[in-house]
Image 1: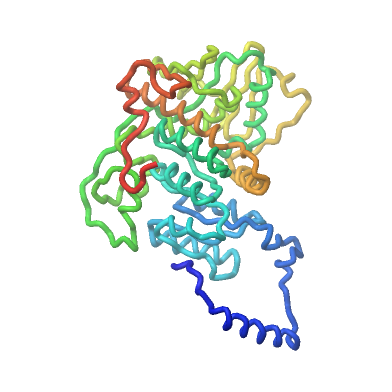
Image 2 (image 1 turned 30 degrees about the horizontal axis):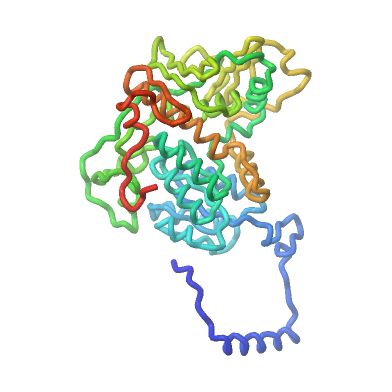
Length: 428
């Protein structure tokens, strides 16, 4: 779909305008209440125009959260699958009672639109960082699903790009905007637990793998499924339908993160928040007795473990200090070492990790130009932790990370896993 504007000769424009003005003298003008902000509607001048890139299962949920917001106008969707483009257009047009949602196969056409303020990026992990940085360079703010990067190098480039372009970036780590997780992290950050000794994250599977190939199958018509665009920056491989919906299939020459990266991008992110979003740990040990231990420069330990959790739902985290501890999970509940830590407060319990509050935080920051909870710097550090832990897991030995050089100390093998080659034209 083209967005080019038709050029009208100046004389024809003036003639048309004069005729219209004459007609306006005799014809009454009706302005819909929504254009004036009546009946709770947000006037167009205050709406955030949003486009979507890669709207599958998770993206459709996120889109529903955006559509709930009265100051959002969802205008366009891009997806490499025709069926998804059609489904999202039907969903959006049904919401607004119009036929106005544009569809694209190439996300660059969507980014070329001057009317779009922000984008929802919910592609597979292979595309997250590349799409986000391309959007930033096009002047768009973005809500980007996680994991947001494929490796350490991408994490650093992503954060630098957002700082340089001044774009608002929100990683889809929605637990930062849930009351009980926020309260638990605040207890750790503000010294209520005493000096923090250990923070615990649940990786949901400690596996480090390399991307592989599946047997070649006939490649579909690009209009139905654009396989080349689906691969994007990843190394080429033959089409196989099983690869289209693999959530953690990152399709590159580097490591596939497994639970350490996918689930870790939530749990480790909360642990990073608990230690005030400081620089990543400097030592990472391989797993021993079911635990992978990383150490911050100040001696605090970050421990990945599968078992030993209080049954509080998925994505559990635990923060231990010299004076107390707290544990939380997706049930919305907290368990504390002492009721005194509540200081008479009641923490709202919201289970099921909804993203609505996180989306609202993003939209508010788009308007105020402030940093959202899941900003690019916080996401960068949390993802570096996950990638470094994954490298220690893959190599089966300790690695040491230098936060000044962003390299592993005296370790060529580990440093080769900091990045991977990207296909043209998707170099960062």
